Length: 90
Image (tube, rainbow, N blue to C red; front, side, top):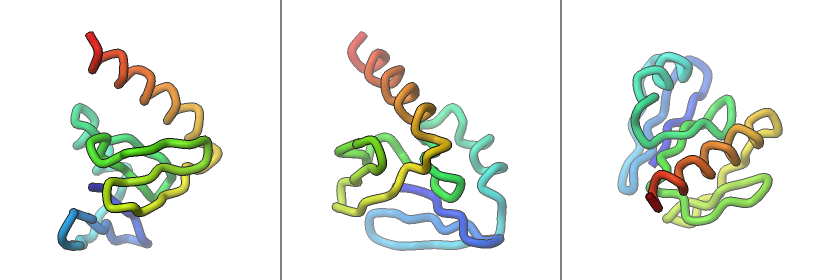
């Protein structure tokens, strides 16, 4: 569902489990650039497929979890979601 950076660890949050490994979110972002992920915070990369609701300050995932969109990423998130919707409805 999403990746979360915590210190030098990356947590991989799935529907059922949580995994962790040592790494940098910036490196991971490069690896998943062409995939369905969007960065919403310096510590969070979220898979589009698990987003059910977006507001100005937060997103809600399919499991009901809420994640904040940091102020510095809000414009980027809005633009990415607009582009994504256009691609889906072509």
